[in-house]
Image (cartoon, rainbow, N blue to C red):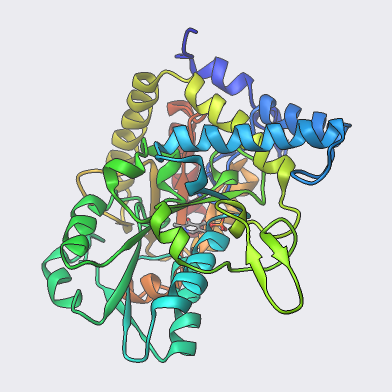
Length: 408
Ligand code: PLP
C-alpha cells in the first residue's frame, strides 16, 4: 500500500483540525498533552459503542468474541509496533501513569528493601516521580536523582557514582515533556545493566516521534499512553520483559486476572491478564490498533523531513526573540519546545494566543522539580504532531511576537 506523503491528506483524516476556536482557525500545538484523533480511530470507537460491544474474555456469545478479537488483535499490533518479543509482554493500562504505578507498586513492592534506592532523572514528569516516592516511603527506600545540566542534558558523568549497589531500578523518560531532548537511554540502559540494575523507560513523549524498538533498547519496562499517539483517552501500554513480569505479583486484584479463587488461596492468570484486573477500556484499547495503523500509513521519510523542517525553523525563530529562553538545547530533539519570555507570564501569553486560535500548554508542565532547577514558576510549551504544518509554525511565531508586544 502507498504510504501517505502529503500533509493535506494527513490533515483531512482529523475532523478536529477543521474547527474554529475563538473565531480563528485552530492551530493545535498542545500535542504533548494529548493528540487529536484520526477518523479511523473515531469510527472504530463509534462502531463498538454502537453495537460491537460485549465484555471481553468472558462470554461465549458473538459480541464478546468480536470484542475479544479486536482487543487481542490490538495487543498484537502494539507488540509489532514496539518490536516486543511476545504478546504476553504487552499489558493494556489506562496510560503511562498507570503503567509506572504498576511497576512501582509491583516491582518495587517485591524487590525494594529498607535503605535501597530508585534512580530517576531531574527532568521527569510527576508521573515518573510520585509513584516511586510512594513505594520508597512505604519501604523506607530512597529516591535518587540524576541531575541535568544547564542545557537539560543528563549528567552522564555522574551516572556511575549514582548507580551503586543500593539502586534496585532506574526509571527515566526517553524524551522529557518539557525539554524535548532525546535522552541517551541506550547508553544509560547498558551502563545500568552492567551493574545488574533494570531500567524502566517512560515513552509518553518519545513513542509519537521516535521509532521504538524495545528489544534494541533492551529496556526492562517501557510505558506509553494511547491518547498521545492518536488513540483514545484512557488507554496505555506497559511493556515488560517476560521473565520480570512473571516474577512480580499482580498490582490490582479482580475479575479476569485469576486462575482459581477460593477463600483460602487464589491463583493468578498467566500473562498478560495477571495485570489486567477488571473490565478494561476494551474499546479504547481495541482502537489503538487503528491509531497504530494511522501512524504506519504515513511515509517515514516524509514525517522525518517534516519534523526536521519544523525543528530547524522553530529553533531559529525562537532564539531571535529578545528575552526568550528556550529550555532543552541539544543535538537530537523532537518538535516540542518550552520557553519563557522576560516580562511576559507564560499563562498570559497562552491566553492571548488562545484568542488567536493557537492552543498551547502553560504552567509547571507536571514537572515542578525541573521548574525549580531553572528557577521559574512556569513555562510556555508548543508541541507538534504529524498533522502540523510549517505554516502553522510560522503563524505561531507571528502570534507569539504579537502577544509579547501586547504585554510589553
Ligand atoms: N510521562 C511523560 C513524559 C508525559 O509527558 C506524560 C504526560 O504528559 C506522562 C508521563 C503521563 O501520561 P498520562 O497522563 O497519559 O498517564
